[in-house]
Length: 383
Image (tube, rainbow, N blue to C red):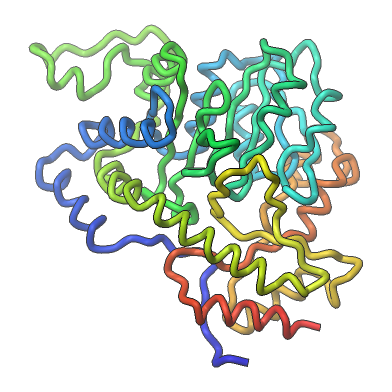
């Protein structure tokens, strides 16, 4: 065994360029949403081939804005995968609507196509497709099932730079939302981006992002009469990104393709190095995936073949300095949702199995070849 190392599950790849970029807003005094946010929005939208990008405080607030813009409200139902981060379901409740859980595929970890049709009712207003860990869901297969009046929202939290049949994530549905949390491939600390090709959806989201104001703070301050406050014609929120964050985001965005290329290389290195471990299966990558973004490298630990339960394996790796995490959680098994809707864990067996048996191992842009070799060797040593 190699000498013990300490390998984080994720580390943001930031440095001098990001530090220098943050100086401009600090020196010019424009710290809140302003010209850097507008530039970041334009560049991010161009990279993902959409007409509009709208920077927000987080992917969660972006999903909330998107559902509101899509008209989701009390009495509506929104289909969401049962294996995802809790925010995907929470935002449906923020709108007063009801999340309807759908099972997931145990190999891709994304929504199970065969389960969708049975979840559609006359109350279904939208479906949220999660591109989990950077792998795009099978959007065309979903569109073949879902009636045209049901809106498609991409939860692309993990999928900056990912693509499906050569089409970028965030351009595949009515709206998309990305995350810039530090565990993602590019970061602004906290932050998110809403994308759409629909001018009206973007306009509504923009207004709601800024308290419901008819014009943005930047537009008001640059007008002939900056002392006049705007009108407010709808309920809004304070979901605005700062120029400090956007300045960092612009630097990170320029590195996105390089980051993904590196992650792709090391993901393939893992796949090759771990292929002879019969109880460990990496996330499946179907042919429709033309670019996996590899926000995380998540495997399925087969409970029937593994020498011990997943959590015991994670304990061993932790003792060797290797950080791991469950892939994510099955939302229907969380106490709040289980008690609110009377759901049983076995109601969504794919999500239940993924909750109990997925394991993310370290993959980020600050790892060295020695780090990857150490992880591979540590996993081979478990028997």
